Length: 282
Image (tube, rainbow, N blue to C red; front, side):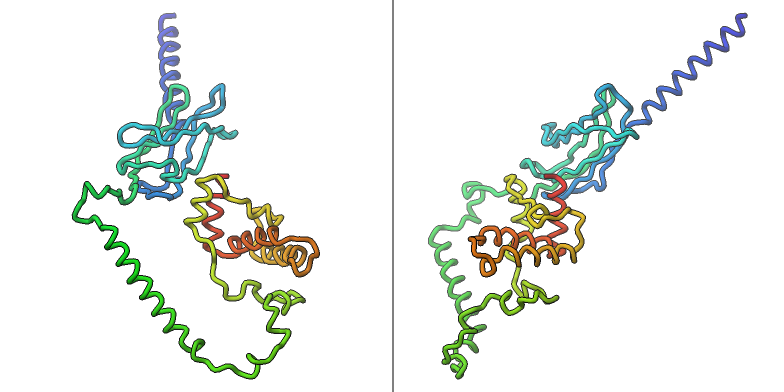
């Protein structure tokens, strides 16, 4: 009888040890890289054991222990979680080692990465040798204006010195109307924007996201974020044909401007990739 009691006792001890080992191993937190700069996307994912709230807390702390980001995440049916964080979005001003901490009940897991906050700007009183006076700034600005004007005149010399032709001197109706769409009323496969340069860049997208003013360009075009490039192009042409001021008696210039901006971003491969990063966080 005593032998059986000993066997049962040892079995219970082994079961408890195995259970604790499995429980401890069921939680993890991961990040893609160990080094990030401002505006980089930090991908965080992992697993956690079931809990009454079915959720975990993810916290990012700087090198002196200040919390710079915290988020509550819901676990899926497999006990997994994931999220994206933009490095520096809440003004992380300190460069150094940062900890990503997973908290789930009594479980605490963490990963460490290095964050580079970028160049720190010092006031003139700190670095006097690099201080530029107002007079020097005015002189520098004047020289820059003269140089830019000279470059512009040089590049435009052929246009400036070109003699007028009979076409230039004639009063032709075609010269009064320069809308690209009116010369392509059948909406052919030619690019609508032609050789126009982009009026928006990734920095502006980031600024709009930070100020919570980033438009939903997919919604403006009536598409989902899974739309292909050809679907984006076709939908733009359809909307432009509907809302272009020259084709509509009502005032639709503001609506057309929104459509143009949405197409400009989503039709540019690089801009679309950057926009989609922020769009996932809206």
